[in-house]
Length: 95
Image (tube, rainbow, N blue to C red):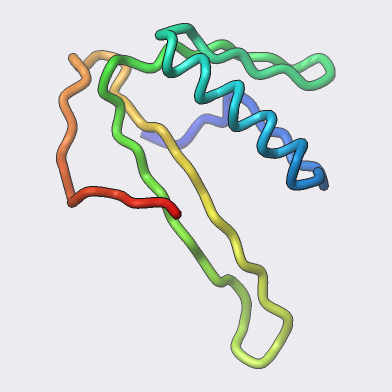
């Protein structure tokens, strides 16, 4: 099935502003609440199950020798029709 983008927002933010967004997501996950994303006229509300798959990825993009872009991506994934079972590839540590 092709990917369908339900919501996308990209903007330069301070580290403090980004931390505030991540805290709100963490608070909603912790309390079992849905996560609502809003930007301008776009919005979506998603309700992750109790055990979604959590993917963390660090990447370097760009051709060798030229300017490269570094990124850290945090992703929650779940099957809309599944019970929330996930695979375990080892214990994640973030310091």
